[in-house]
Image (tube, rainbow, N blue to C red):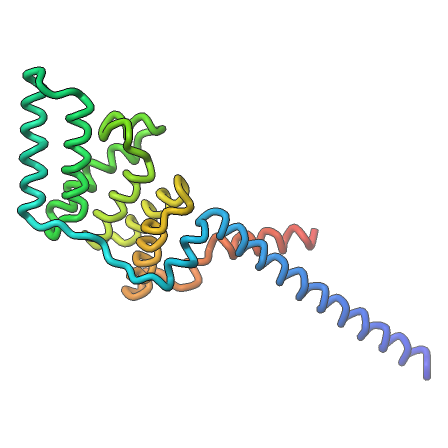
Length: 212
């Protein structure tokens, strides 16, 4: 065996080890990215794939009744016969009915009401609008529902993600996020690869860091 052959054999072995090491490193990074996604979104994101998705809907009579009761509560409040919390609770019931309405004009009205709270900072805006029991998760999820019904699937996806950030175990928000993404893919507005952008970004950043 010549010196040249020995050098070539060593070179091939070194290259093979480097390739194997790179494969192991990328597999590890992918597992890390998957773990991060599960931490951010919770187990709900994976379990929702096997769960059928259906949002409740409210007909015009339910919506009209919710609006009427809210108006009555507001008048009672003006006359001192209803508390601030009564008004907030009635407002929440009305917005819930609007968000789940079968008619898009009502959904659009829910989006308008909820967007003002989404744009506000902190939990207090939600409680001021909808009562002490209201949470940011509830508001974001209602907003996602309303946007989904008016076919603003990108907006629905963003609001569902916001709800999941507040409560990673919210299965309804995870299912709604998935439904919005499926609608976006169906309409050709987003590619399947873009849906994994967070995980891919983690892999890419980690891969670059490992080469430095």
